[in-house]
Amino acid sequence: MAKYIFVMGGVLSSLGKGIATATIGMLLKDIGHKVTLQKFDPYLNVDPGTMSPFQHGEVFVTDDGAETDLDLGHYERFVDESLTKESSCSAGLIYETVLKNERDGIYKGNTVQVIPHVTNEIIRRMTLRDEDFDVIITEIGGTVGDIESLPFMEAVRQIRLEKGSANCICVMLTYVPYIKAAGELKTKPTQHSVYKLREIGIQPDILFCRSEKKFAEEVFKKIALFTNVPRKNVINAIDVDFVYKVPLVYQESGLAQIICEHFNLPYKEPRLEGLKSFIEATEKADKNLCIAICGKYVRHQDAYKSVEEALQHAASHLGCRLKLKWIDSERQISDNELEQSLKGVHGILVPGGFGIKEIAGKLAISKYARIHNIPYLGICLGLHGAVIDIARNLCGLSNANSTEFDPESPEPVVHLKTEAKYKELVKNKIRLGAFECVLNQDSVAYQAYGSELIQERHRHRYEINNVYEDILAEKGMVVTGRSPDGYLIEIMEYTPNDFFVGVQFQPEFKSRPQRPHPLFLEFEAAALKFADGAIEAR
Ligand code: GLN
Image 1: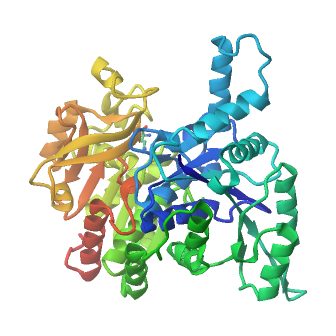
Image 2 (image 1 turned 90 degrees about the horizontal axis):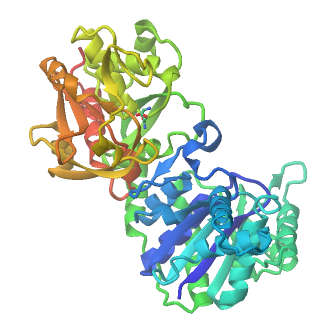
Image 3 (image 1 turned 180 degrees about the horizontal axis):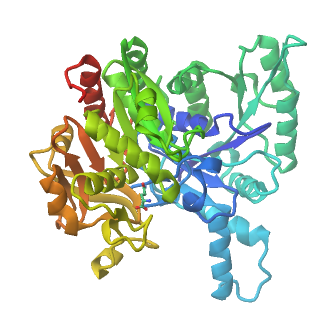
């Protein structure tokens, strides 16, 4: 039987609950316990696949093709484990199941209610993998007191009752603001959040208290007294300048030991070697590297989270201080403007995206990178943009387009596949999750990966149209990676340039701090050469 840790939030959102949850996983794994992490979100979308990155940040994709909350990305990067669809659940998914059960007559004429039917379905999913792990860490989205999160909290209460408090830990993340006028850290919001949690029958075992300033002993004592949480379990989660330092802060407070003692699990001091050397490399980095990212959500902090992380992982390993320059792809950008914006930029990354609005900027920037020999990594829509540009401007296919933007395009270089064998690969017409890809040995991609067979995660509807493969190749845009049966084009490279790679998949999802993604490493190594003049701009 697994032990259960539930992480809930109080006071306000955006306190870093996902990072805190990921940290617990990292510490316990480092000790040698078998852990998994899961996120339960109270919104009614069945999954985050349809949610706008403007509101909700990036959609993270697992190997098995689940479209999930971006917190799963934090979990994978911190714990260095690939998660599955079982790690992502929403109220929408719960209701979908309950309503289907109702229609199927599973409830045998009973009145279907939040308690017990909805809560039982939540409990079933939360405890589904009880046999498979030592510790199951569950983050509950939202903040204590939200109407939507009540059934989830009730499920937690019931699991604790059923499994016993020795087998469950409830962690609450709160905020302790510093009020300048009073010159004091204020504990009242934390007290009230805990009262609110107790109203629904949950006494937290551990508090993570976010604050800008370090707690004096009396602050710890006051919080402990008013919240009924033992003093040593009140942890001051002080702000850090780099998110990967969070595990060090929690570890210093003895978190892993508190958890292991509570569960009566073996404990030894976590060493966190990989993490520490990654932090050290990041802090010691002394070469400047500037990468431009061109996309539609550039003003939303988390919309390209995994891309940013992957760039950072690789930069640290190359000893580079990374600077990002955001370019809005929805604006019509002239070459002059691009020239201005790209001054001092050493590499261009065009990430994935959807919809006609953002393609104009993406086309312009990939063309600019192609003409000027600036290292270019195009991801999914970034590949599509590059193919459209080359088809139009080098191959003489002036009407070339993706049918995503012009369904009637007479030269559909990117299109929807309609063959029956394709339909078997996709879910609701989207190609989702990990697929294999075979690389040409004579390619930049092969140089990066160092192996012929790779596996990467996808999330897209449109594919490169094989009909145009030879025409594109004649002008230097060649296929260097395909599905093992040769049917799908997965990677293309513009060979006249030093580094110009477009991929149909999203490699950023697999990058980890201690194992940067090979393609990002190769891209940034080329960008560094560009910075040094070893790759010459045209
Ligand atoms: N919109 C494109 C498609 O659906 C690209 C998707 C993406 O960039 N992830 O194929």
